[in-house]
Length: 347
Image (tube, rainbow, N blue to C red):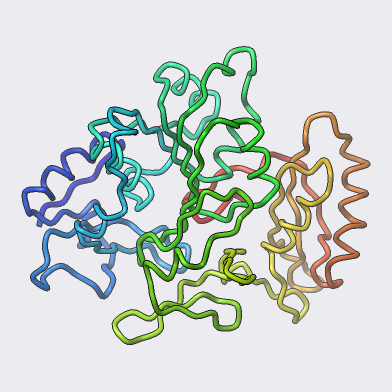
């Protein structure tokens, strides 16, 4: 087994070439205090690729994926031949591998974007990539930093969103800005691979998409579980079902204990974004010397809205929709930014 540490998405070309030759490759040295999960190469099906998990459900670890399984999810038709695929994901992450693999399979190129939005815009204008892969948060930040006079002429043919929940308000905003762009929303994890894909921008997936990839699945106490090798395995994702549709609403770790009551931080952020003038919102907890911890809310404004009036509507809306324990006690007006891994946003 070879071990490489790619700095950019383009560096993954060497990794893919080694895999094609039948060599298993790890993108991180598993011996360097970086544990591997229970699935490891050596069952006679090779090659394998070891990718880094985000660590959103615990300690980051090396996850082994079959090369054939990774290839099965890549669209290799002529429509995207020769495209440049830009991505905000780290090269060693599962999402980064997916973006770079798509470029490699279609004889295109992969472009790693800076997390500084002004720099990212310069990269997009200079390289004119046909496709973009990123989280909804990253795309929304890009739009907030857009100078329409300079950037209006960049319109990708494809945008792939993943790594976190897509909220309806964000999807509507993206559709308005890129009306001719094809969108694909992906729900995937390094541990389980790609589980859901849709072209919808309202946060819902067709549940048959999940059934095709994982025929046996269920929802237990709101958490999605998959049957793998005869055992039920938790995805640690909270979901909702509505007929033939399924929506991922947040991570199970997003439940906070406030005054002895369980509070969903994702729900608070989602409800806050229903208020006119709120562009993005994220709820988190702050320590309190009186009750242990309280809910705090960071939010950003749509252009042209006044903070005082928006916050007044926010407080009223959340008090009407939430239990008292879930009411935000501290408010912060700021950009909701990209976090250290693709599963989280920064507090």
